[in-house]
Image 1 (cartoon, rainbow, N blue to C red):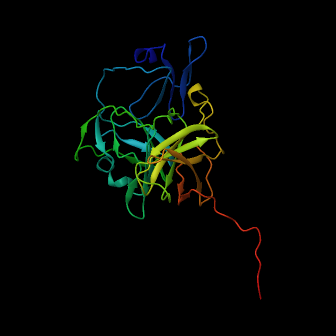
Image 2: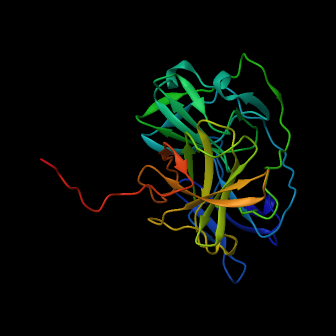
Image 3: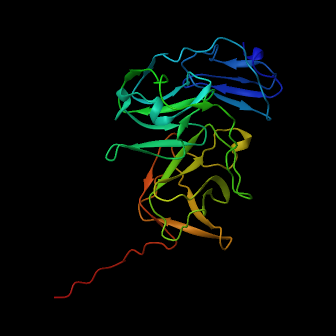
Amino acid sequence: FINNYYNQSSLSAIIGMNSAIVYNYNGILVGSLTEFDRYSGYWVLMDEQEINSFSGYLTDYSLQYSLSSGANLISFPSSLSYPLEDALPESLEGVVTAIISEGDVALYDSDYDEWYGALTSFEGFKGYWFITNQAVDFSFDLTTGGFTRNTYRTKEMLQGYEYNQSTLQSFYFIKDISIAEEGDWIIAYNDDVVVGAREWSGYMTDIPVMGDDGADYSLGYIENDQCPEFKLYQVSTGKLVDLYSEDQMPCFSNNTIPVLSKLNDTKMSVPKSVVLKG
């Protein structure tokens, strides 16, 4: 079935939530993924850029999904784009804690009933990781609310600090950076390799961090239990400034979303001894 949709010379692999299929060195498809379904999302790995067109029946927008507690990779049943909060039914309030897409994330703050992150809408033909704290059945609410036709959006990159999308990714939310100004960029590194970047937009800016998934495009990217380093690119000066977290830096783990209180341009000093005077 794969050859009906993708050019064999460009397709490297397709990865589902619990199964995958790849071309081996002999050009033979191997793996446990044998068919697509309307409920699931998929990572499609290509050796080079390619435009594909498909024909078939539209998915009913009332399609019902069954989510388990944890991470669920699902489809979006529309060719259009919908604002995130318009498409999510009330039954998911407090149940879905985060939604992750290709390089973008939305994190739910239950204290303020607000979503943070670069992911603000669902787009047709894309898959999404729904992170939940319990099992739930639901359907997207696509009967009301504003929508626009889906268009391909090129992700913004800072020239000279580009990185590749990986199937393994994490997002670090930062509440405050003492020396950052809007328009500056936060660059994530693994040693001297750029593994993510995001323009600073203020409180709760999310920084994508890409992991090493074994493919050539992710060579040198961060691995589990390694911690990223962050630097601030100051647009006004062109300088790259090291940043240090006031919190303990959480190490990388796929599909996790750490929140850091503050990054500073100096390390927090820890006293080596304490003297008590009577």
